[in-house]
Image (cartoon, rainbow, N blue to C red; front, side):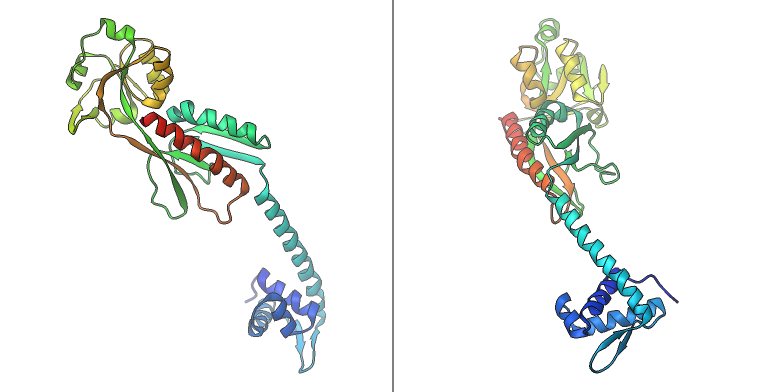
Length: 304
């Protein structure tokens, strides 16, 4: 049964046709002479034709072999040009770069860093999408994902970035007219705004000096973005559990203040996740070298 010949076998045949010797072809290809011989035999079997007439002194191409030699030479030229083109693309700091991130940390932390990066590398088309999913990174053309969990996938790399810390916040306007908050159990008497991921966990778990309290809640509002919760808290309608890094700009403007400041949620780790590639494209290297230390510094600041 005839099969499609392999490109490797055709390139071996090209070397043999040009150099006229199994030994010379093996030397150029840096392989054993037996490998050249086996490749030619396999190629002849695949094509169902004799390509080479072997004698003790020389190698002669048959008529079919002479025709194939021209095509094999074209393949070699194509492969050489492809290698140059791919190498050039690997070295370019240009083209699209798509990053996905959870909306909260994306809006308040990652977006300013990406803006600075895009200005620094104007030939890159940098785009950020708000999501926290690893599934379908390749299918969606996503180059990097900011993710709140480690990954157990040998085809992916997860670079640790640091932690975020959540605590309770409310606006001075709300606290001025609301019931006093002295313990997490008092939250049942307040309007609370909850992220859907925490709502699915049936309440908030808070810790103070080793004491752990789980507060079951009936939230006034459930949102799928922490930015929406921050807006509702800032407007004076209730209490929200927010990352320090999200609450920071509101604190600086006096629009929010911590509630029960010694009661904290468990710190959440963040990772920069991307497909394993070796060698790594230059734009990937540039992104990692620029973005990772800045994210690590911002997250470290938020924990302090």
